[in-house]
Image 1 (cartoon, one colour):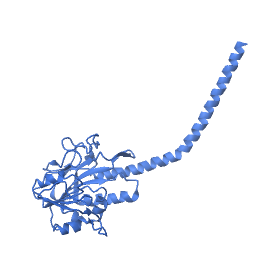
Image 2: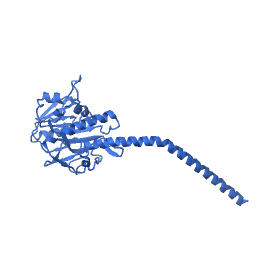
Image 3: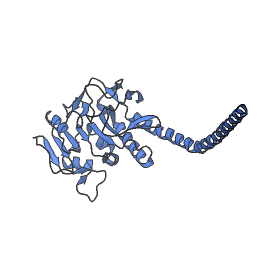
Image 4: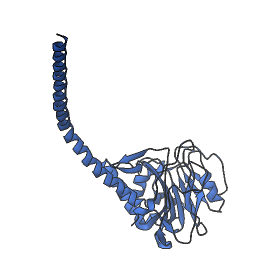
Length: 295
């Protein structure tokens, strides 16, 4: 009797296992079919946007400048920028976006260079210097009704610098850089021997209009200038887009092409003894051998 009950129990358990197995198999196939279409679409989009991210990386790929060194201008951590140590022929410096940090401006002033400083969000500078010229004015791409904002050309003309060919520029204006550069003629941009700019929202590759606007700016800048240094601001985010690592905020140093010669860069970015994390309480964003993407 016990033997018969034992056999019945085994048959029952086998039946249950068989039913569970069939149910799992059917539901698994159903779920797999349901997920296949959106997954394929997502993968396609991911690949498409990854190619866009790679395009931006190519525009940011740095080269080394021949017979010139790089130097950190400004304070440690946030507010310091890497530039080419060649200021002997500089006519004047322009600094857009001041807030409460004038460390870059002070380092430039110590070299005997006048610094024209613009920020419409502050009432005045945290300290004074004989080479400082402050204006409670912001930068824009097109003149409008807001009298607190002016274009590059309006500002250079007001200061008598439209014909000067050895200006330097530092610009960190929280996104206003895009329209400002986009609307400025290349001839005016070429008046700057060096440009250091913080680009914001670089990871907006999924937005067609923003992506095209970025490419327009990069193409314009790369026509007259060469990227010589790249650094990612670790106060921003670090995204992986279609397998391509792309921070959303970059600090890029440009040097005018017509004055210099360039060779391939084999540096690993960030560069030791030059770069520092903007946020000292977090690790710097690793970019690796970014120069490998240069043409």
